[in-house]
Image (cartoon, rainbow, N blue to C red; front, side, top):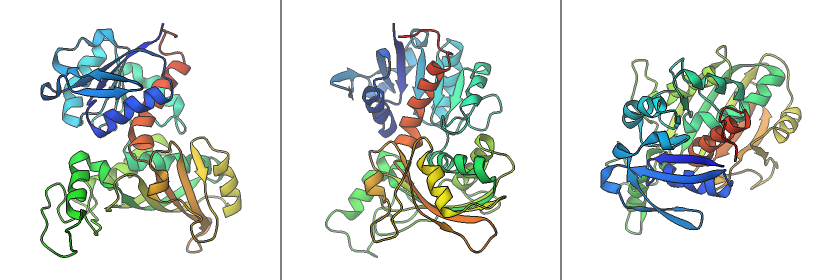
Length: 342
């Protein structure tokens, strides 16, 4: 007897990726329920070799499901996640709605699996921000070895992190007729995104940082270590899929680049591609569609004691969202929290 899985937001970028990941990883599901808003009722989505029709979120009986993988935004999650959890269905939410709630565990399975036990307080588990997920996967094994004091990170984030409309906007601005500097129709972004970089993701806060940058700080502290200091600059770039991060790390103890390289090679969820030659590193195109987080250009940072610099790349729709969500569900089963073994 397997599990019954509902997916809220099944027609979106991440929802569709969730369906693909569930099928690809052979998740022990007896039944999949794709759910969406009323305007998407009857829309078909792919699950393995099958085509499934979306049902209405508002009329679905969640007592029939074991897991609800939620990817429909904060407002939907705020309204529905407590109701779904009260039905006995475990919600794994991709929005920012529950990440900072002390009664909701924020989980990356390679980083803080033990924290998942806290799900019982609300029957909700939060998935971190996409830029944070790939960062902490790489930081965790290094922190265990040498103790991280401070992180400086600059992100280069693809437009898929802002949804399908953002991808469409990049495409429409670049296809054929676009000339840099001409007037463009910018709706999803505050400035043109084609052939451009925008140092602004999410809303600005009073201290001048954006909410996206604050998320990286708050989530790293919650999942990894509250003593870690972190500053971020988050930039949207004209790439469709995969986020990149240039990261400088200051450690409490000495750690050499070669040792860091070996530690990361042995760490779960990471592939090290670090040849000191042209092309000996990973770019967004190579990371797209891959489950691993890639680390390249590992080197000493001579500006601080015990410093390293590195380049981290990951598919934001996978490890940053859909894959991590499915991995959390797998962890629930592995830890024996879901008493309905297949």
